[in-house]
Length: 238
Image 1 (cartoon, rainbow, N blue to C red):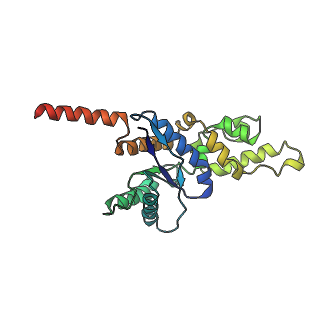
Image 2 (image 1 turned 90 degrees about the horizontal axis):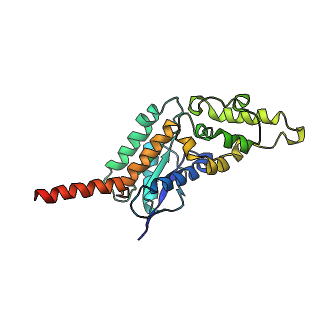
Image 3 (image 1 turned 120 degrees about the vertical axis):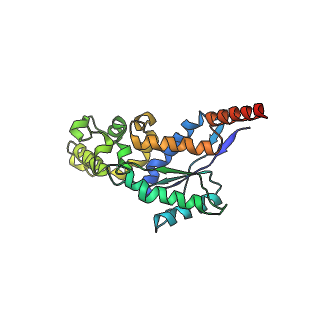
């Protein structure tokens, strides 16, 4: 019998939702290949954004997720820094610990963090050929100012906006008011190659967190194999 997995997602903002929803879906589907048997990843459920203290907001997301039957809850927060250390130490770790410590069965406690370095737009820069295709330009990375490592930019959103502006310079005046960055989030999120994202340390952490979440559900082959081996050793001792 096939297993099903319901994944929830709580993002910082609507543009993050539009870009990350497909990334999350495809990342879980990829991880499912290592699971025992067939695991169907149902469409990602995006939770309504909440305001307030981060730990309290995550608790509320966890309650919402449980009510909706969500089995793994992904929580997104931008690092807003050159590393994710502060985001994990002051937001993710305290909030996740607070949820797990609650003596309440009405919460989803299988939590996964998504913490892009600086901001989500850094992940949009991971697949530069795709980004250029969506912008509609033949200019090279250097001409567009996107030739550096995506996570090295202090403000990757402005880098993309500037790249769009550079492309507009060669367009007829009547077309220069066309494309805006807001139009890129969904198509780029749907088409970005996962192997391009894997070059980013923050995405690698997200992938590891997915596998950890699947282990908690006893879905991963490696976890089941380890448990079976341990069980055999116990039988031999008795």
